[in-house]
Length: 294
Image 1 (cartoon, rainbow, N blue to C red):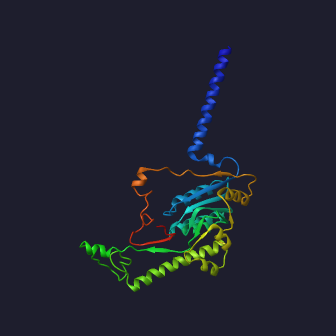
Image 2: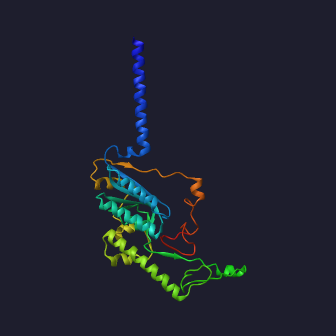
Image 3: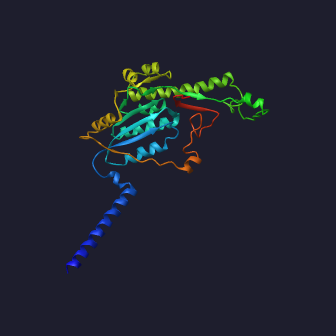
């Protein structure tokens, strides 16, 4: 009799463990576990050259759907990157703020140009004293291989429908008119950068214009100039995000694990960096919010 009872208890216990295991497995696979527990701070990391915004914006959107996420902490280690990609992440962070969730930016070793553009959308910006930041400006790079082609006996033949259809051709020098056109585009994009910083940081536009000549600053210099709110580490930024969200005590951090290295992704260009730093763009013309690294 006792053996039967023990057997029934063992079976019931095993069944219960299997059921709990299945529940946790389903929760893990479907992401339900992320919505369990108390209030959290979502950590979103921006590393390296900003090429495509989709991964970051999708990550932010996923956190926005989580009712337990009360604040966002954006960790930036980036020299910037593509203009449109930087602008899309900036707008996504503004959307987070419109949802009533505070955004804190934490600058690592480098958060310049497009990296600073993104940070300026935050409620608060923290940097380390030695962080390299600023570089508010735009760069356009046009390689010219015309002389090389002539040396090896290759001549480009262009048939075009308009005078400027081969604008920024890599096989010849720019004409004065072409240079003026490209400069006007660059100036307009630069103006957009200045406006975004002025609005995001609540600074007078004239003050931002004085700083928007491409120069870089240390984190301490940036704080003195009003580009950064305070000096502090990633942990300090986490504490600040929790406080802004009204989370009592040390906040719980939630993050979405990024996909690991994939040979297929590498071969198809998802994890490939061109020498000029902007994969997927036309190599004859790049326009970027990018701190130019050798």
